[in-house]
Image (cartoon, rainbow, N blue to C red; front, side, top):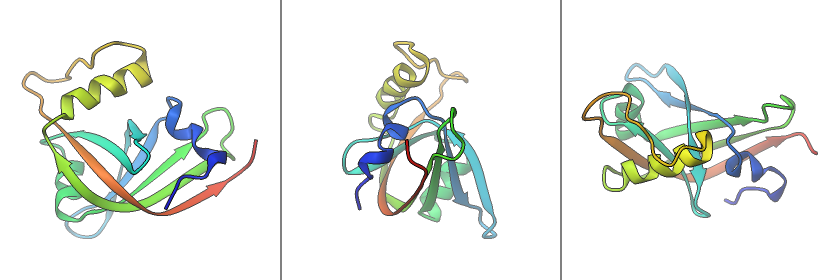
Length: 132
């Protein structure tokens, strides 16, 4: 499944994403996250000790919603599942995300010793709304 050209900018511009994962009891959990798209996978990064990380490892389903901050009627929902995840390259990916979202060259960890995990999500369904 590919990202429609009409909505790709929601992944290339610094649009905050909302990641929905499933808790152990099946209830959804939603968090704002930084993400990008490498042409094959939607990539999300999370600290190793967070609930969303545990959720993605154990219940591999995820949905990401991106809404244009200037037009709430232009959005894209991406549904998928975790294809792979790794701590290797996790912090390097966060540095890329920091440049995209903040303009800073490096991501400054929130906590000392923070370990980052990069999740590659296979895109299974894309829903879009709005036009420019």
